[in-house]
Image (cartoon, rainbow, N blue to C red; front, side):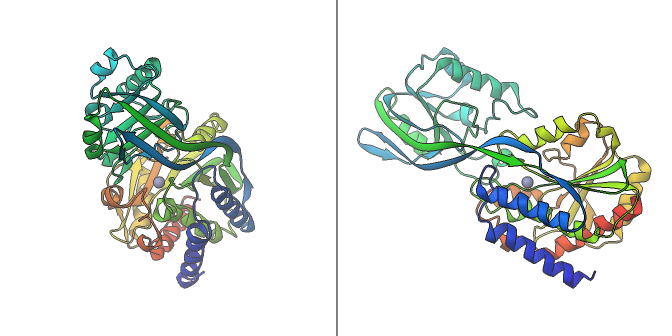
Length: 403
Ligand SMILES: [Zn+2]
């Protein structure tokens, strides 16, 4: 199979995932179309596939109206929030201490400053979830405000380039909330104590999603697993994040069409990495609780096609001979470098289970996160399909070597 043919395939897959399907947000028809597409293609290359399902919600919104003293203020519904139509006094809060002391039942609270400095982890998020975040959520649920307005600035670490960013992105948190820029918050705060009106029109829609798991190889007790999350964040085409990783798995599936070796190979289109509660990861953990010991190497591909910079890989708890094989194999393929460690990705699932992991992303992940990831700018223009071909060939080489 020559690289020109693979390049044509890569472009075609990117087009199908990012143009034919306008959104892959979890719970949407596009998300289902993407998992069906993945399952159909890998099956055609002789992989045995299954698509275990989980519950999730889709969400839609139709704007926010916020007025105080006959003046309108610009605000946006928090993703996955319930809607509301409330007229009530405004209470402005900027610290946990103030929130602890507040009487907030039935009123509208404006959260600013320290309380709104970083996005709060969803209340039921099973992985990283700091005590300070849990405390703020618990206090709000105990105080029972009718609605929350959050005035935010930037939080590059958690939400990339979004300004303002939603303080809440949590379908399990039932106090209606909206968010606005910190400047708009400063103007609105002048109405503290006055009656304000807030209407937010949103809808939570019960839905289903699935992971797609594709297997090949005669010794499933000795398996290399490769993850790429197939969902995209609400409001982005998700071309680099992470149609790029999915396309590499599809190219790899074709390269492995005639594979009949002993090493088990499992390709996983993980679903819900960019959704508030990571339901696909939770389902994968639950279904594989007693077989993680079969995994000799867990690999995660995320944001691998960025047109600037090189592809960067990093190794986690790999035994020396495995690490040596990976480094030697990848050094034969131009355009791949060993980069910095990062821990926010799905390879965390392997590490939690003490399995060796290989993570692959862009060497310019910081630039991506602060400028492109999770925004409409993450479209086909920022993806270089030749990088996807390079990576698929390097991974193919590695798998044949390990087999
Ligand atoms: Zn991603």
